[in-house]
Amino acid sequence: MNPTQELHELGQSLWLDNITRGILNDGTLKRYIEDDSITGLTSNPTIFDQAIGGGDDYDEQIAQLASQGKTGEAAFFELALADLTRAADLFQKIHKKTNGVDGWVSLELSPLLADDTQGSIEAAKKLHAQGGRENLFIKIPGTPAGVPAIEESIFNGVPVNVTLLFSREQYLAAANAYMRGIERRIEAGLDPKVGSVASLFVSRWDVAVQDKVPAQLKNRLGIAIAQRTYKAYVDILASDRWKRLEAAGARSQRMLWASTGTKDKSASDTLYIEALAAPNTINTMPEKTLLAFAEHGRVGEAMAEDGGDCEQVIARFRQAGVDDATLAEQLQQQGKQSFDKSWNELLRRIRDKAAQVGGKGGQR
Image (cartoon, rainbow, N blue to C red; front, top):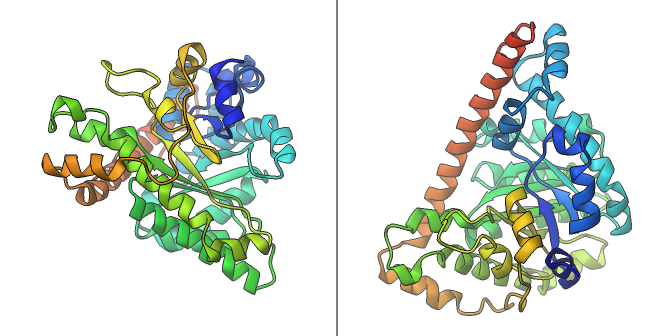
C-alpha cells in the first residue's frame, strides 16, 4: 500500500489541485484515480491560465468560440466546463459509491464578484446549471460579501466550495452560512442534502511570516492555524445544532486543506500533507506534491481533535510580533487580489490565443 492509499484508508480524501486538458487526454488523471487514490479535484484561474498557455490543447475550441462571438468570461467558462465535466464524469462512480460525499470537481466564480453578493448568487446558480453535473462545486470566497452568497446558494441547492478561508473565525462564518442555508431548506420542505466543503488555505501563512520570526518557528504557523480550525470543525459536528440537521438528512460540510504545496525549499516537500492527516477531511494538493507524497510520504498519527498544541504555538508567534487575527484578514484580501490578477491574465491569455488562431479576441 503506497502512502496515498494509506491516507485514504485513514479517512482523508485526496484531491488534485490541478486540471488540464492534457491530463484528461493522455489518461494521467485516470491513473491518479486508479493508482493514487485521487477522489476529486479543484481548479482556479491560475491553473487554467497555465493550462491554456502551456500548449495548443485549447486552440481549436478557442477558435470555435471566437467564431461564435464568445469571448472573455463567456469563453473561459465554456473552456473550463469542457474540462471539468469530463473530470466530473471520471469521478462519477466515486460520487455514487460514497452517496455524494466524495468525487467532486470545483469551478471558481469570477473573482471580480468577490464583493458582489447578489452577482455571486446569480452566477453560482447559472454556472451550476450550465455545468449539468451533480458533482460540480461552485467556488465562492468566504469574504464578507461571499458569506451571504454562500447561504443563499446552499438554499438554492447549489453545491458550494467555500474558498479563501484563512482562519477559524472565517471558517465559522462559512460553516454557519452553510447551516443556515440547510435550515432554510428544511423549513421550506426541500431536500437538505446539498454538498459543501470549506477550504482553509495553509501554506500562505508561513510565506507571510517567514522573514519575521525566529528560525525555530518557521513553517509552523499554517499548521497551527489548521489545527485550531480543525478543532472548531470537530466541535461543530458534535454540536446539537448539527445533529438536528444530520437527523433531518443533511450532509456535513467537509473541511478541506488548500494551499498544501510546500513553498520553502528547505522544508520537506510533504510537510503539509503529513501534518494535516485527519479523517473526514480533504487535502487538495498540487500535482508535484501528490507525486512526492506517493513516492516518499509517511502517514503518522491523525490530527488531534482538541487542536493539540496549536494555541501555545500561536502564542509564540504573537510574542514574536505576529497578530494572527489581523494577518488572517490581510491574507484573505491578498488572496482576493491575487485571484483578480490571475483572472485578468487568464482573459488576456484567451484573447491573445483567439487572435493567434484567427478568431476575434476580446475581453468583456
